[in-house]
Amino acid sequence: MPSTHTLWNPAMRHMRCVAACALVAGAWPHLFAQQPQAITLDEALSRARANEPAFAAAAAASQSAALDRSIARAALLPSVVYHNSYLYTQPNGATNQAGVTGAQAAPKFIANNTVHEYVSQGVVNETIGVAQLTAVSRASAAQAIATADLEIARRGLTATVTTLFYGTATAESKRDVEQRAADEASSFVKLTTQREDAREAAHADVLKAQLTLQQRQRDLDDATLALEKARLDLGVLLFPDPRSPYTIASSDTKPLPTQAEIEVAARLNNPDLRSALETVHAADLDVRAARAAYLPDIALNYTYGIDAAHFATNGPDQVHNLGYSASATLDIPVWDWLSTQHKVRQAQIARASAKVALTSAQRTLIAQLQEFYNEAALAEHQLTSLKLTVDTARESLRLTRLRYTSGEATVLEVVDAQSSLTTAELGAADGAARYQLALANLQLLTGTI
Picture 1 (spheres, rainbow, N blue to C red):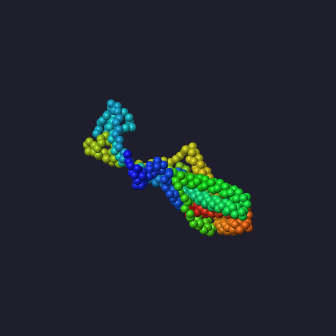
Picture 2: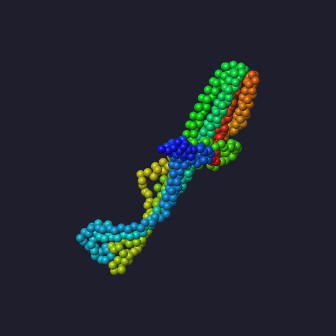
Picture 3: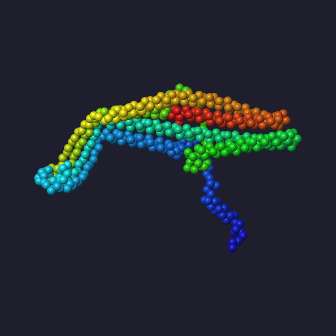
């Protein structure tokens, strides 16, 4: 058995503690969680773009549209195929002079040349028409629409992340405000208790201070729960595990640009307006493509190789099997039971609808610019007033506590001053978030975020 000295050796106790901690860390890793990391708005946006499925789908659609454009361009170029085949046809018992070696067995199928036929040819095909040319322009317009839709998806995700980001920042500020209010209420309970012990205040003052403290503690619990909910909502977009600890990094408040600058940037960079414009352009191309069915198509073909009864460049009697053929085909549409006319009409109807959507997007942009700018201007103007209110309420509480300590103020005045300061600080937190969100909405319209 080990000696008592060995069991109580400090070095051995240290080793056992290290081993036990390692076992606990392996079994319950959440007990040894990493320190919360500070997340900036830019980092939050970057993480969300990598994790959000709707944005990933929009990015995939944009990439696919770019490939469609490449496919449409390739359709304008000649296609080259190296064609090889061997054809055997059952003989019918007679002979003919179709082959290159004189009389030979005749095939049963009159469309085939000989009983044994070898084909090894390089074939070049090219089809030229208005429809093919329009398809390239239509694919380019579709790519532009997909790019604009991707930008719309990006800005929609940005708006969501920004709202959650500043909502979490506001929840953190409110939690801190409620924590300060609870500490202030606890301090006031001690003050009233001391004054009661010194027979300078009634027991009713202590009861009122305790009631206020209890309410502040409940408000703190609600604020803490709201903060946790806000962190989880944002964490879904940022981390594989939404419960990962993090904090919101504070950012400087940017000044509001002039309205003229906002309007110029919105006309140039608004994705909704660009998508509507490209949709109208694509609708024009659809009308052109439908009308192209009235026009003829030219098909060109060039074939080089062998098509003979022997798989060789030279057959019997030094007959040259290697050669070429070329053809040009002009297909002129004559009658299709008005289907082309109806397709043209369908394209025109879609174009009219796209034009209505364009004018609606223009009106919406004008209204949103004015609405968001007015909101941001008012929020910026009120920030100074809110900060002044907080400073005034803080000074009022300080003076009221001094007056209460000297017996010149009542407990109700102190409680009222505490409530005024808490309300002012909560209002300042909401006002800061209101300005940040209004400014973010303007930045989304102008493409600066």
